[in-house]
Length: 315
Image (cartoon, rainbow, N blue to C red):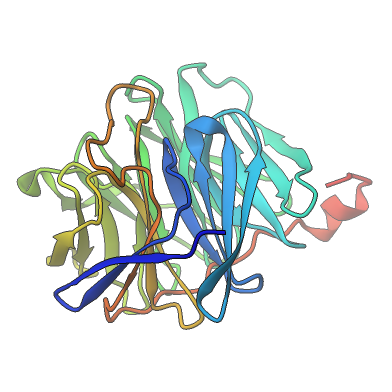
C-alpha cells in the first residue's frame, strides 16, 4: 500500500496526505481507538472507507460498499458502524460487509436525506437532515439502543456540524448555507433537546460550517468549506484560530491517533450536485494535521439494548 506522505509544514503544523485515491464526497471522519483505525465515507459513492494504523503509520486500507447516499457514521458495538443512509439507519459489520437495517424513517419527503451525525456522550446517535436541493426540510433525528426515535423540527437546508460539549450537556449543529451554528441544551441522561439558539454566525468570515468536532477544552473545530480554512471557536463562540486547510473544500474533521491529538480532515472532489467541485489537485483527499496543540475526546459507541438483542433480531 502507498505510505502517508507529508506535504509541508506551516506555522508549527504538519500536513500529511493519507489517501491513496480521492473521494468524491469525503465526510464523517471517525477514530476507532479499539481498532486503531480511521473510518470515513465517500457519501455520494455509497462507500465506507478505513485506514488502520500501527505505531501511528498506515498499515491497511478498507473499502466497503454500502450503497445509497451515506450521510455519516458512528462507532457501534462488536466492531460495527452505525450508518445514516438516505432515510434509514443501518448497521455495518466491517469484517463481513454485512448490512442490516435498524430503523427506516417513515413519512419522509423524498427530497430529504440524512446527513451529518454523531453519537452523544452516552451513545445515542443524533443526525441532522438536509434538503437534497437545499430545501429547508432537514430536522434532527435521534435514535437510541432501544431504537426509540426522537424527531426535533429544525427546518435545516443542509444540516451539518453535529457535535457535543465535553460534558455532553450542549449539542451543536450548523446549517451550512445559512452560515449559522446553533446550540441546544442537552440532557445526557434522557437525550432531551431544548430549543435551538444561535451560537455562531459565520457570515462575516464568508463561509458556513460543514463538519465540526469539539476538543477536550470545549473548543469547536470547524471545516470552513466556503473559504478553504479550518477554524477553532472558543466555547463562547469567539473565533480564536484559523488556518488554511490543505485543500480548497475541507468537509469534516475529527481528532484521533493514540493520544487523540492528531486532526484528521476529509475533503470533497465533486459532490455531484454542482455546488461543490474542487479546483485543487488534492481535492477529495484525507489529511492528518499534527501540531494543533489540541486533544480530542474519544467517541462513544452506539449499543443495542438487551431488549432488542433478546427480541430475536439478527442485528
